[in-house]
Image 1 (cartoon, rainbow, N blue to C red):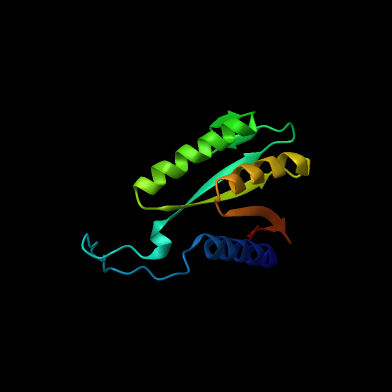
Image 2 (cartoon, helix red, strand yellow):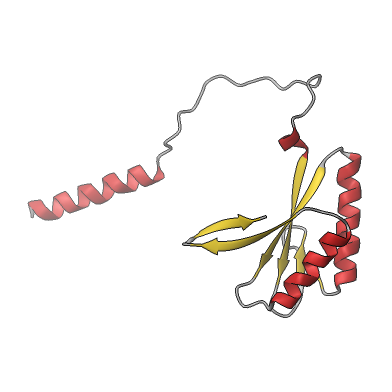
Length: 133
């Protein structure tokens, strides 16, 4: 009986440890300055492009699908122009499904290279998501 209670207490303990926040919260809320120039990381926007096995590209947080690489390139050009007006640099991260042929991925890469947009390819390495520049 005691061993079962110890097991339950340990399970609860590990449950609370796993859901608790490890970082300390600060009571200080820093002000935002409109006069200070934004640092380089603040000026960079990442656009994600998903690639499905049938060659369909997913854009706008995977809410729109694009079949033609020319339409994908037009979307990227328009997004790049909008971000340039906001003085932000655009990067593209390509996320392909595990069974997607690389020919479809290279179509997305060529669209980005034609516009001279920096590209990264997301892959899973050892159980965690990694980005390959």
